[in-house]
Amino acid sequence: MVVLREGICPGMNEDFLKALQNKDIRTGVLVAVRRVLLAQYTAFPVSGAELYEELLNSTAILSTGIPSLDKLMDSGLYTGEITELAGSPGSGKTQVCFSVAVNTAHQLKQTVVYIDTRGGMCSHRLQQMLQNKTSTIEEQMEALQKIKVVRIFNVFSLLSHLQNMRRKGLQKISVGGGSVKVVMVDSVSAVLSSMLGGKQNEGMSLLMQVAAELKMLAKDFNLAVLVTNHVTKDEKGQPKAGLGQSWSHVPSTRMLLQRVKNEESSSLRTATLTKSSRQACHLMQQFDLSQLSEEVTTPISGKRKLENQ
Image 1 (tube, rainbow, N blue to C red):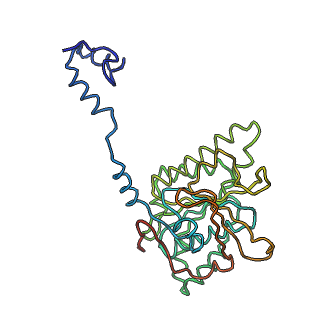
Image 2: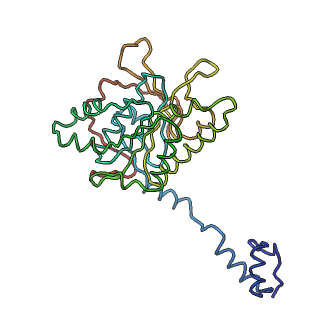
Image 3: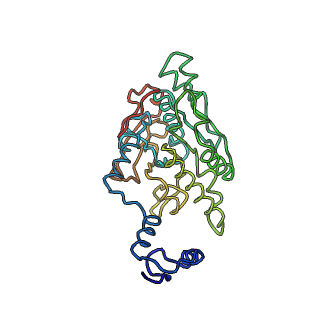
């Protein structure tokens, strides 16, 4: 038997000691107390192999509908992660988002939440892509119904919508049995860039809140988050993703989209991998915007295939 006192073992703090004394418990068998404290307050041990197996079973990889981009990203968009497309106006960011939306809604029969912050959503373009994949009006309408467009033009509305999706769940948004598998923000910089820089401390706080909400959505609901971002110039005059150093840690994968040099009127674009945990950076692929309406036969690949429902 020992007299119980603060610090005698892990977890024996002042509050816990007072609680025991209120129950007229002043002595005890140290081993028994230590076992109780360890059982209540220590983390349950999990092996690295178990964590890896859980990751394999929960991760799906969704095709963008563009084979060259899928190859660049090691098969496509990973659920549970944030992927970013950075580029100047006309680089193809929104067109790639359209391709992801159509491929997910039509091929995978899953729901997409498309948050449009610039007014760039074009339903005619979506329908044009779908018409090249199926000739039936019924299938086209079914796919369009699975693309949920939300128009938001300031960061406060964006935050509110993201929080509502997380708190209320995404099942209410789902259509026809398929779950929400992709959330897009096109573009995240449109509502954040004007609030950053100088002494605008509120802007940095809002940026981190948006980042946190997107990360929680990706992790908690096992979906892929795709965002677009503008570009600025680095010290060498080369394009780099905007929103600063703090935001650079948010996406797990980042691609820089650019027009092919000396082909200003061309539909050819290049995608350069500038951040990835799976592929070597600075890999580059070329794709043609004019071919995005052509049917792509590979709907999905990955650790766990997402079956059509």
